Length: 396
Image (cartoon, rainbow, N blue to C red; front, top):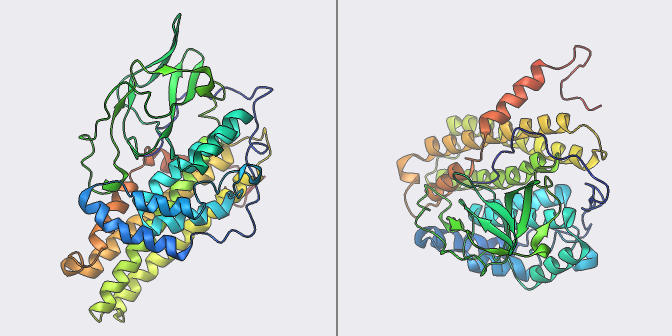
């Protein structure tokens, strides 16, 4: 699930006329933004178990998000949004992840797509996307693919696609998927509204351990017609750094929300069994608390560094720090899952407790691409650090 790793080659360098990192995306969120309303959180939590049971898409949850203005919250105020970004967006994603990891996964893709259009699209494309988001259209980024992948072919009759995508979260409900595709000049982004794909979406592919409600699947776009106005940005924009690697911070926030839910559920089981005061349990969850808080602070700090990075600066230190946050988050979430399983035992993994479902969702969502590569990046940065630095993670 999530992003596929970038190719080994460096992305295309910046060119004049391409929206830069800071001017295309707001750096200060709406000061009045209070995060996920309690009523919306309750709606998401209330639907989660039913959608896990039947495997259907959590449509009511996204109606609640739309009603609260959260489908448009990341957009600029000039287009009816609230300029929610940076740490405020991470906090929102964590809150949504705690309420429903499946909803958090799809919402993170929606936010990602809008951010890419805002950063690299034309004013007309962004205005059209804003109108669609206000109308309740759901965006997403479908990058993962099998085999030769998706290609954009230019021929005498125009632009067409060949190939497809897999792990397409929200398939059949995401109506504005952003599709990175290989083209002659490099990887391009195609915003293709649903209805123009000639093939039938394949949901049989999706038989997961958890995260059933994302209704992911395969879709074949071979023969789909693409218009020039469907192309977002220039070749190479999708893999530009630090935005591509730094985008991991969004799914880290959602994962930490999922871990919050696992811990809260385990706590409820222990209280119900009269065992929350056991010293063994308190020692077990003390370590979980330390790890989760450390991962959250690293994620926040990585976002702060990303927001402060000047245009044209070397992104390598920031990306190493993002890898540090990702490694800490995976370890913390796995520890939370193991602690919950050991604490509640078999009894706590039965209905009516939701712990079993929450654990399945969290373990599935943690399986983002290239975790070992992130861990290797952390070790390499530490061992290659200059001798004159007190810490390899110092800025500057």
